[in-house]
Image 1 (cartoon, rainbow, N blue to C red):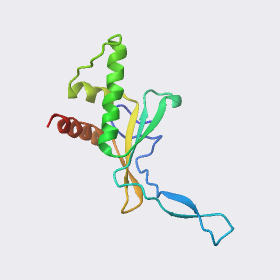
Image 2: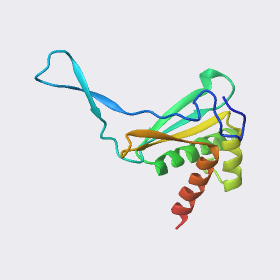
Image 3: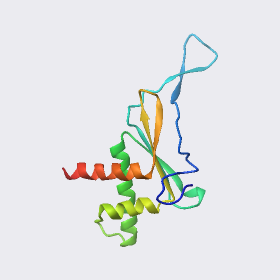
Length: 141
């Protein structure tokens, strides 16, 4: 995986693009499934996170939109705070604290589905930090 704070992952690949197709059965063919473009909504997001240098610390989560993925990052950080503060019921933090948490992750990327092209577009650490800020501003407004 890439260096901390850089957002350039070796394991996830900076140029991740994948066309989504799903198998469907054509009732006139007995040869098996055919493919057609997925009907995922634009903005469907897959959040890829690696917490440490070990491969076993890699995980991913799927979200219906980017805002939900950014909320997931906030919740991850809130869980870290709760563990550090011995389970206090409320977690208070600044945007800078959250950004520092994102920078300390071994690697992080967000793949966002674009229905027009049928591809997931990769986004790096800096993009994620900007989206987290937008997400938090939207919650305050």
